[in-house]
Length: 304
Image (cartoon, rainbow, N blue to C red; front, top):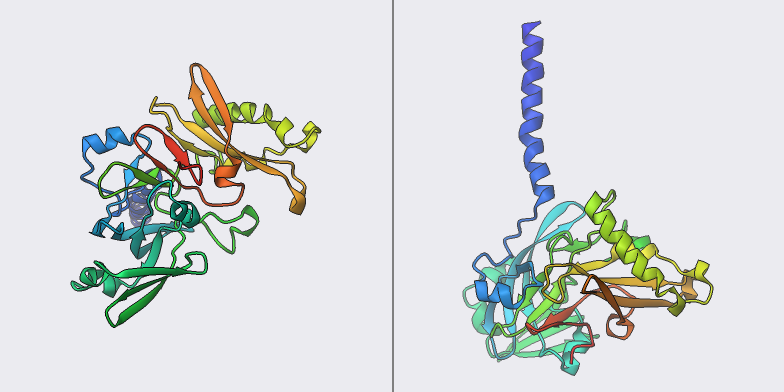
């Protein structure tokens, strides 16, 4: 009997030992790619950013850097070695590139002491809508595939193509430009994407739904055709530095392949929110991006 109790107690202790770290990890995301020494002035200038990626800039003129990051995919963590390539905010190249700022390299290349020298001052060319980047210097030429991060699959295809992110979409993640005057916003929180919502998050969802319903007339004259199904994928970020979450959400008329979709930015104002149509900035389809100049957030191609 005593031996059975001892075995049972040992089993319980083993479960607790392994379960607590897992629970703690689920509650908080720690990514070695997050900058641990971000200055207070950087945090204050870009207060909408919860984290900054720790990019090692190797060519500041061409906005080329290196990054080693953990990527969350299907509950697992995968390591990535990446080239970071930014464009000048507001430029045609910025709008054409979208959120495709990462290119995958090997771990060996990342750790090679001479690799930074190869990248510095090299020529960079792109093909197939920036899907491939070719780096050429002297007689050496290397081609790299774009690594879409974060990756947000269509709802109907998430089992085949699971989401990938730096923070499980629990943080607003940014890349500060080398001069720290602007920050590229690469990932935003998705507070409603999880299953059961706590009381505070449910209240926030109901607020977004209220303002979304008020824009249903933009989608259809028939209110019953206005779908709020996409609200669970809404983004939350503090756009106007007032310590309140602002939101970006999508409405659809729910007509399958012929669906009409519009995207909106909902910004806190006084005791409520103002809502602005930004469909032309990001469109309906996947992939969020934009930049902050320290004064405001400029979504997608509305970046001038």
